[in-house]
Length: 371
View 1 (tube, rainbow, N blue to C red):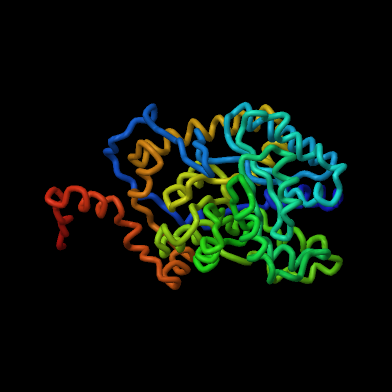
View 2 (view 1 turned 180 degrees about the horizontal axis):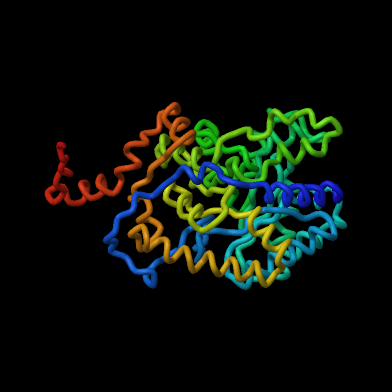
């Protein structure tokens, strides 16, 4: 297990080096040149899992379970403490199988005693294991990851998934901390979100493709690399968020997003598409690995400053205002959304629609100029 965790980190870092464009690039804001906003008034606070976060992005679950990954977790926890952002553990499966790996995870709390820390287990974890994971980190919330595609390709992976829904429902009912169900990079469809809501899940991270591809990672660990055709499986985070809008808010969990987030504009895009907060893994892990802890802290501070400025750029004072920004979806993302029934034209007219709803008498039709 420890060797596998080290392999995952090495392969994830290799992927980051080859990362390029993804479907976040197919989400554009319509620029309006007279915004009623100021950067110093930008309010980036967001409510997640029973707490108010000062920043709408967080260090998402990455690793743990070996000496090397324990040191990575120590540095990530230090960065979270110094910048005030939330942090999630990588899967604690290694700890649940081997208690000697505890310190490689526990360091997330010891280095960050007052921060918002999320434990992470897979859907097979029983209640005893779940409670052990939460207690080890004194966790504020628990992530339960769904990773069918990864398990399918993983040489030693699980092959039985039919009991997962029952396990999820039992855990949600029994646990005292909020539960966040997340994918690991293949996306959550509206049907899945609706089913999760029916199981009592109140928070879900859509975690779409476009970032670290665990099908690719596990395929690289196979002697014959014979699952290469599953590389790129699933839906992107922007597609998942846009499609989730087809469900009434009362019929789905509150949404988080991750998967392929490379810079503050991607965070803003995900927030404008309906996410409450955005998880970042690959970019921050690469920064830490290549430049060190001080550089990671500086990078997170840079994201925080730029997010304030970007919020003002699109005419918003707080995150709720982002629901009224005009978004243009292009390329394969637009094609996917149209095929799935998302009204992409309505996304492009949200500001005007909101203004008409609040002040119908003051909204004049846009004049069409005839050549």
